[in-house]
Image (cartoon, rainbow over all chains, first blue to last red; front, top):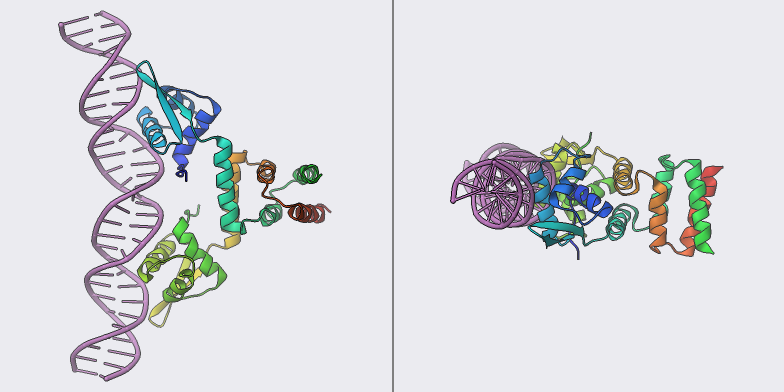
Length: 122
Length: 122
DNA sequence: TCCATTCGATTACGGTTGTAAACATAGACT
DNA sequence: AGTCTATGTTTACAACCGTAATCGAATGGA
């Protein structure tokens, strides 16, 4: 049972999912484009992620190189399922219906989803 | 900008979305079917939800009756969008594709979604 | 009238999160 | 050799969360 990744930690994960391994300084550099965090903050988040076993670190000279342990795919799947379970009784249909009603779907989106579904069915 | 509702608070919201207004004791009674919470705990959660303006309470004699202020529809939409923004670049298609690939869909589900989409499109 | 029950409000307390400063240590530079 | 710098570790601290116990006021019953 993997531990949950917090909002702030997720920003760090995104950086590492995008490129790894990286040093703490590198991570701080890339994450800085999104959030205004000090290097110290990023280092705290990295430590916590290591403690949660969401990332690994191995020594490179005198510094650490960090890499994801949990894959983005895996995490996204888990979180998506969580949402679908919590709000839509675990069924995808109501989610799609819901978002469709909210006009989150353009006609193009709908067409695309239909195509995808057709492919899956055959 | 509405405040976020925590996991535990959500269980209380679900009860009130299902039936309202209710007293604290009633809420505790219904929520007890899911979680093992003392009445005190439920009362704390109700207070916090009132503070967050997610629910309202009005005096009925000497006790409060609680009702949702935030609609389930609204909240679910917000959370869905949050997930889609965080993980799928704001696009719904990839979420559906993702869940579909994860075999969350039976053939019947697919057929049902297709029907829904066809109706929407016309 | 006095007590037990019922309620909401206040307080509690350990854990997580966001955000960081301070500290220790190992190289790097002078 | 002594100092600046980079880097990981420890500590900090307020807000939020899960989970309650306790307090104080009001009510209902004996």
